[in-house]
Every structure is written in C-alpha cells, then in structure tokens.
Length: 356
Image (cartoon, rainbow, N blue to C red; front, side):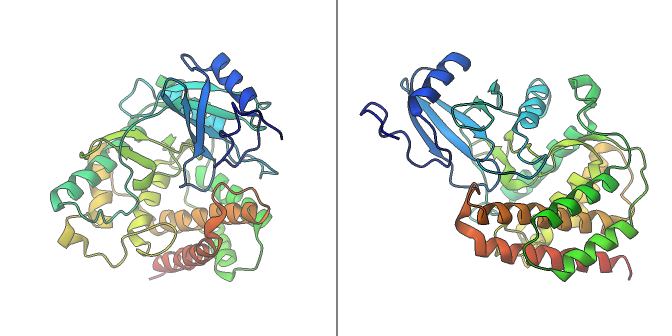
C-alpha cells in the first residue's frame, strides 16, 4: 500500500493491515473527543486479542482491542462480549475502564474492535512480587481476592447480564466446549490431555445452582493496580467472561499458586509463601469463602484439574493460530509448547489427588 508522507509513519508495530487515514476518519467519527490519529502501537504482551495504544494529535491516549486477523475458532476472541460486560460493570464496585465505542464486523482494521479509555497504572507479571515488602504482598493478594468475591456476589440481573450465559451445568458445558476447541487445534498427541478430558467427563460435579458473572481469566497480570499502591484500578481481559460457577474463577486463581516460576505464565510453586507473606492455597480459598459467607468447596481437585485443562486448551488454540500466522504475539511458540505440556501434566496430577 502506497501512503503519502502524512500517514507513512503510522503503520509500524501493528498486527493488522489497514489504511491509517481510513482508521483515523473512523475513530474521529465514532469515538467521542477523538482527534486525528497520530500514532498506534501494539502492546507487546498478550496472546489473544491484539491490543493497541492509540494516540491522537492532541496527545490523548486510548486503548483499542481487536479480534486478530485470519481464520478464527468459533466463539473465540469475543471482543463484543468484553465490551458488553465492562460496560455493564461501569457503575459497580468492580473497577473497569470506561468503554467508548464498539465497532461492527466491517472496520478499517478488517476485524471487529472496541475502544476504551487509557488508564495509568501497574501490572505485575511476577506473582512473587519481587522488590516489594511483605506488607505490600499481603495487601495485594487481599485486594485480589476481595475484588473476586465482590464480582461473584454481584447479581447479573442488576447490571443487565442475566442472559450473558447459558443455563444448566456450567462445568459440563465448559468441558465439552474446551475439549472440542482443543481437538480442533491439536497438532500432536498429548496423552495427559486426552486422559484428563476422559477424567473430567467421568467426574463432573453436580450442578449446585451457583451462578455468577465469572471473569474466566482472573489472575494477577490481568488486573491493573494504582501506581505505588495495592489498590486495583481496573480488571482487564474479559474475553472469556460469562455466567458460570464462581469456583471456576477461584480455582483458576489458585492454579497460579501451583504453576512453576519459570515458563510462559509465572506461578508461585517453590516460593516460600509464608516467608514472603503470600497466602497459601488453603488460606486464599478460606478468605474468599469468608468474604462471601459460604462454605468451603467440595470436590476441589475437580475445579483445579478443570482449570489446568482449560488453560492448556486455550493455549493450544493460540499455538495453532500462531502456526497459521495470525497470533497476537507469535514470538514465544516454543515456550508455549512447553507450557501446554506442563499444564497437561499438572491437570492429570491434580486429578490423581482426588483418588488419594
């Protein structure tokens, strides 16, 4: 594409192919207060929906989050659902960025996207929180579990999300969905994953009627903290959110306590958590249940096993997309392969806990 000098410097560092003038005109027409496009650059982190920092000629920053280009798995990369749930949570105790615009399917980027406000804050990529005090660590994890408990206590009906998910056994639906997604993107046989799929189907927990808004990917590096503080200013990355069982979010959060420090997603396995004042898994679960006034969960091994399996299935889809040339961040393919194997083995190991 030949560009005049006015736009020639804007197309770098992006995954999508587009005409910058068309994108600029679109944003001016649809995003309140947006002036002409000055700069767009992709955030380096993240593997699913490409996310860009967009700056207009006044120096005002925005965040644009889009579906990746290319052939996508069915129901994946639901930016419209992200936009809807964050819009619904705008006036609740769950901190989210302000939503500014949701596009249709036909856009200057070639895929659907939404635009939201740009927030200044800190994202912690290492849950061990190196360089921070024990007091800071304790407050940070306390804030993390507090926000999760508030999300699960929020009635979907009060924020217009009563139809945000399907009725019935959440885990039955999820095991079926992610088994199908995994097998659609499987590139080589991984015995632990197939063993786990069979185990989950044979050990499904009964539907106990608990339903809440679930984030689907709730972990430390998907929230933003106020700079220099343990206060959460935004819960991000709602792509996998739905109505479901709250213990799915809780187990997914606790899964990180079992992951190794090395790898694509850093965990806390091997860290002396008592020494650094980070809660143990049992303490974290107990605090969550105390905040919500509920009993400790039965069948905990099932929830943890499901969490490992589901994340492995998600990453397998990302890996498959990377080989198709349209991953958001394709630079860590070997690390991703290793992580999927680690997750599959951990899923089987946690399932075996139930047999002891």
